[in-house]
Amino acid sequence: MLRRVLAPLHPDGIKFVLAAVIASVLLFVVSRPAGSVAVVVTLWIIYFFRDPWRVTPAREGVLISPADGIVTSVDAAPPPPELDMGDTEMARIGIFLSLFDVHVNRAPIGGRVLALRYAKGRFLDASRAEASLHNERMAIRVSPPAGPEIAFVQVAGLVARRIVCDLREGQRIATGQRIGIIRFGSRVDVYCPPPYVTMVVAGQRMIGGETVIADRFAREPVRQGVAH
Image 1 (cartoon, rainbow, N blue to C red):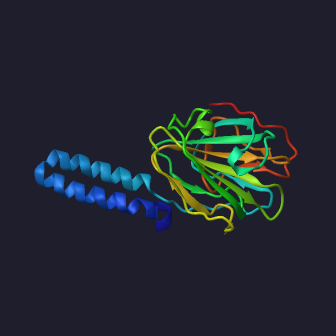
Image 2 (image 1 turned 135 degrees about the vertical axis):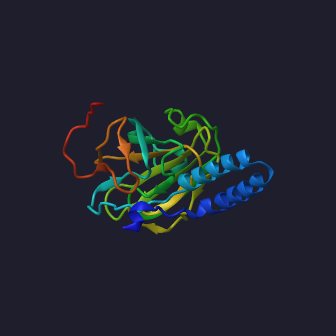
C-alpha cells in the first residue's frame, strides 16, 4: 500500500537533494524567507527525481512507452544515422517530458543492447520535431528475441543538460526496465519498424513502463484521436 503513495527517489537525485537540504539550512540561518523558498525548491527536486513503481504488460510483440509525458508526434523518419540501421523511414513516436513529469526512462522492449551512441548537439525546445535531429542525444539500438531491431533515443531539451544512460553494449534488458534519466525537461523518440503498428495519437498522455505504444501483431489502421 505504501508504495502506491510514496515513490522512491532515483539514485541520480540523491546528490541534488542533499545539496538542496544543506542550502536550505544555511539560508535559514541568514534569512527565514530565503530558507522557506529553498525548502520549496528542495521539495520540488524530490518530486522531480521520483521513481514510481510501474506494472509492465508482458505480452509478446508490444512496445511500451519509455517515458511519462505527452505524445507530440507520430510521424515517419529514418532512424538516427549513428546507429547504422539504414535510411529507410519507419514510424517514429515522439514523447515530450515536461518539468513535472517523471523523468526516469524505461526500455520499450527487452533484448540485447547492440549499440549506444552519444551525439553532442543543441538544446532546442524538446517539444519541437527538429529537436530529434539537432539536440544532444543518446541513441540506443536493441535486438529483441523476436521481431525487428528497435531504436529509441533520449533527447536533451531546452532546460535539460544532462542525459544519464545506465546501459552498456551487449547487456540484456527487460521490457520496462529502468535505463536512465534525463534531467529537467526532455524528449524520448521510439522508432517502430514494420510490422509494428502504432497504437497512440498525438496529444495522448503516456505512462512510462505501462502504456502500449505499438504492436507487432496488430492488424488495424493507424489510430485517430479526438481531444475532449
